[in-house]
Structures are given as structure tokens and as C-alpha cells.
Image 1: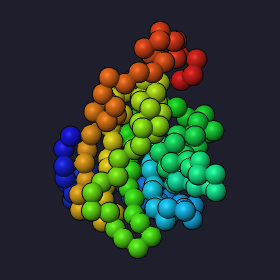
Image 2 (image 1 turned 90 degrees about the horizontal axis):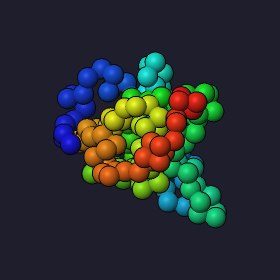
Image 3 (image 1 turned 180 degrees about the vertical axis):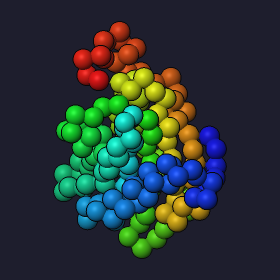
Amino acid sequence: MIETNYEGLNAEQKELLDAAAEVMETAYNPYSGFFVGAALRTKDGRIFTGSNVENAAHGSICAERSAIVRANAEGCRQFTDVAVIARGTDFDTKEVTSPCGACRQMLFEAAQLSSENLKAILSTTNKDKIVLTTIEELLPLGFGPGDLGIDLERFR
């Protein structure tokens, strides 16, 4: 893991983080008041975004999973990078927001489908603290379809 700030990112990383920051504002979060945005870059350079969506049954959909599902609906399952950023209703984050366990698993499986160690950009609200990492660092010893010998080619 590498800690940096916005100025330490390259142009592609900034573009992905900016897309996540923009979509963060579309969060539907009446219960937590926590806004999260995620952006995925496909192998062909497209960006798919997602924000968190909450409901009264407390069965929330996180921003990372929202982005994966959105990309899947468009026929895209091959990714290279993900960016995640968050804020509260009345506060900025001081530490980076990392994907939850369910999101880490979905990102890990997306990485196996992509034959990539998905790179992750995790940022505070003001982009003054950013952690650059990978899905394998976030989910060590991860287990997915590739570990079961499943032929993923038909899903690519």
C-alpha cells in the first residue's frame, strides 16, 4: 500500500477518482447520511460509476457493488482499477473509506474475471490522503471461482 494525495496521482487515476467523487453526490442514504462513490475502469478504458443506495429493510447496496452491477448490465466484466471516496452529511472523512467485505469479494471475483490484480484508489473526501493498493492486498488469501476450477472464459 502506498499513501499519497491527489497531486501524487497520474492523469488516469485522477480521472477515475474524480468520477467517483462526482457520483458520490447521487447516494440515496436517508438512514446513514454517508455518501460513497465508486468508479471502475474497464480494460478498454471506459468508466462505470456507482453510489450507495439504502432502504428501510437496511439491505443497502454499496457504491462498489453498484458500479459492478451497472457495468455488468452493459456487458462489461473486465476491469483494471477502482476508485472509492466518501463523506458524511455534515463531515468530511479524515481516513480513507475501504470497501466492505461483500464489496471486497465482488471486486476479487471481478479481478479473477479480468485476470488482473485490480488496483484500488481509496480517498478521503478532500483527496488529501489517498491509499493506492490492490484487491489482493485488501482481501488476502481471497477465494473465488478461479479457485474452484471454474472456466470463466464464457463470462468474459
